[in-house]
Amino acid sequence: MTSLIDVIFLLLLFFMLSSTFSRFSEVELTAAGGGSAARSDVKPAFLRLGAETLDLNGREVGLDALAPAFAEARSQDGPLPVLISLRSDVTSQRLTDLLVALRRVEGLRITVLGTS
Image (tube, rainbow, N blue to C red; front, side, top):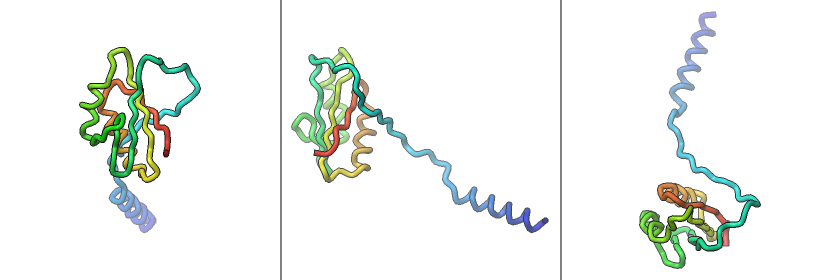
C-alpha cells in the first residue's frame, strides 16, 4: 500500500511540473451569416494580406501603422467594415498577427474573405 501512494505522488509531481499554466491569446472570430444588408453609404476598407506584404486600399502599410491608417478612414456613424482578402501564401500565424493588430483599433467590423 505504501508503494502505491509513493507512485501516485510521483505521478502527481510529474504532471504538475510538466504542465504549463499560462494562458494563450484568444482571437474572436464570427461566422458571416445571412443578415441584413450593410449600409451602402459607408465605404468598406479593403485589406489584402500576403506573406510579407499588407495593402490597405491599394497602398502598402505595416502592421504597426494600421491604427493611424484606420483613424483617417473611420466614420463617426458606426463601425467601419473591413474586408480582408488572403493571398495563397499566407500562413495562419500571419492572419492571427493581423487580427491581433486589428483588435487594438476600435470601431471596426472585420470580415475575412479567403484566398485570392
